[in-house]
Image 1 (cartoon, rainbow, N blue to C red):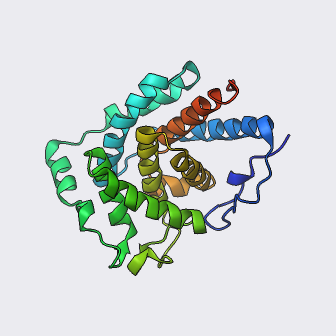
Image 2 (image 1 turned 90 degrees about the vertical axis):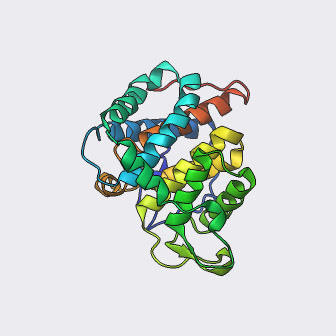
Image 3 (image 1 turned 90 degrees about the horizontal axis):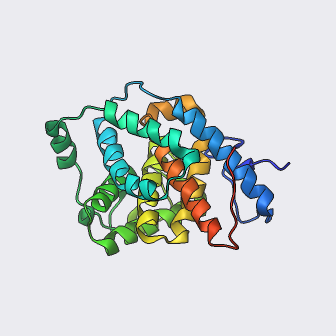
Length: 252
């Protein structure tokens, strides 16, 4: 039995290059599904601990409302319990309109960002997500997401900031929160476009997040913030496989 090596060690400290990975067929796919289900079960246990970042909670809820449309349409029985956990978590969150308005008012418009100036990665990601959730300019959304994808694919890292012309990143590259924000944006964009490029990058970002210690994740990501993205990823892969030689996998 082969191992799913992509989550075996901390992938921020030890990035995987992927390009040198040999094709291992259906056995690899079985190992992938087994690995993801293991992490789903672990994330499911993060039920109700308090998470203080109101901006994250607001974004997470808004993304969830959009992705649930995809999940409601495609969800199968083997994922039902995980989906219920997400719904229960959503229902437990109380954010009044005043808080939501304050969160939204602090988000910079995506059109204000310019490659001729230094870019703060977190501010860009939050603005990108806000634009996606509010049906903003599709070309502008794709432009900035493609830049982030290109930078991540080259280094398998996200940096705290990017200098003029979005060249090599600067500052910290171990900010877990940035990788989670990128995963939200990728999931939204893939569900909207079905472009494999974004699912491919989402898989790598989720490999990285799943490789991290759960205590670290709990400090920077809301409870169930990864469960939802993993569900979208797994269903997307499963649906994609069904279109290729009618491959199907049962989950254990």
